[in-house]
Image (cartoon, rainbow, N blue to C red; front, side, top):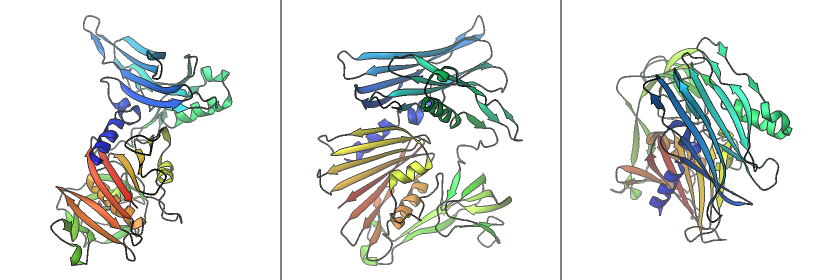
Length: 424
């Protein structure tokens, strides 16, 4: 069953909220349900067409909205934009994940798109458009320039015109502007290599920052729990084995279970508090950790919503395979799915799936151990075991109350999937 659910999540990654803005091959899809039935949005970006004789290029993007419950399937509307005969650099794409809303509460959802286009031979701002399409199929546009922020702090672009939204209610104007402001900024100075994404401290006691890449070097500062770490360079040199888990009761240990788990940690050159230093990557991850001050513990949806905005939500009712399933797509690329496997209307088997982009399996393993610590599994009569699964490791947690939790990790394209099964 777990394999099929991993495949289900992999299919979700083909939705626009995960990858559509990064690829130009083939259509990507997004589905939702409202009072009209089930809907499908196909987003497509053509490959540039080069005119050898004129030395120009052309490209097209289109969004096609289909109503799935009609027979035959009905095309509700088609949105298309293009740049033709561009003699310099051509740029045309869906700039941000689409959004589905019902701002007028009529039970029929609106579709929001954002496009970016330019035909230019310099680094001037590209044009950005926020496009709203409602039941009439007519695009309503907000026109803007992409905001560019250069390494010296100077800026270019950033202006916008409500245009068609001047004739729409304030709620639509406000949503259009929020959608724009969250996505139209590009910082040249903030661009780090893909191997060096943003990092946050996940150690409850904070992390020591050293004057040199050595445990014997002077401690010059400490990064507190949840603090952002500006990584400047992965330092070449020997790794440091850091123990992340150790079980002191030999009766649980066998060829199947680990007594000790160590991470080969790398040194990173960082900047903290305006000073250079070095830190081990043992307890760093590309997203902030959950707030430990909440008395109610870790509530996954609240935690993820504190990191990023929900761009799409889908709820599914009872089927032959499960009692209910809810999926959330976030603007930062995270996808979260909770599935209730039942027995229905009783406590039984629940499963959380979390896709984290730009996250390694080692980082996910550290996060899983942190979640177990958050649940209190490392205290009292509770127990945590690390089980070998081929070349991978799964976490097993046994609570004094009889509840069992299992966390496993699967590498996917550009990220990792964390699956947490809870059995009551």
